[in-house]
Image 1 (tube, rainbow, N blue to C red):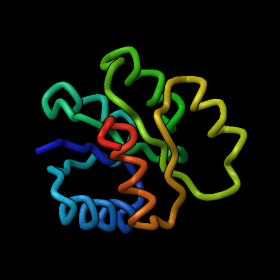
Image 2 (cartoon, rainbow, N blue to C red):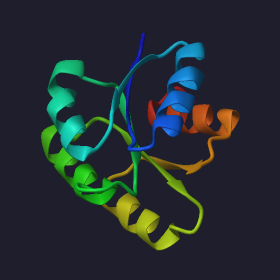
Image 3 (cartoon, rainbow, N blue to C red):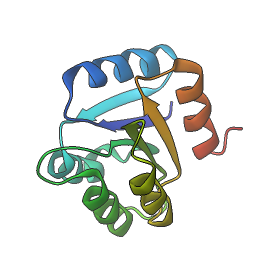
Length: 120
């Protein structure tokens, strides 16, 4: 079973992501911010990370850069609201494997994850 770490400061987005991905057969763990995520990745060893772009404290870009230093081969998919296109482009250049727009559309989210994992 593939392991996914969802990093998001919004409880509802975490709940929605966990529900959707658990039903799709993934083992899901969560982190509420970038610092929390960095503390968990070594123990969890996720196969993929879903990372919110806009978070207080360590934002998604800073977290992405730190994750790519620690676990460079683990795909990271950004999750953000529409209208963040310039930041998303920068994140893709920094090593993000894909983008999912919130609110989550289940088929699109699953397709993006499968593509990042090399399943499609």
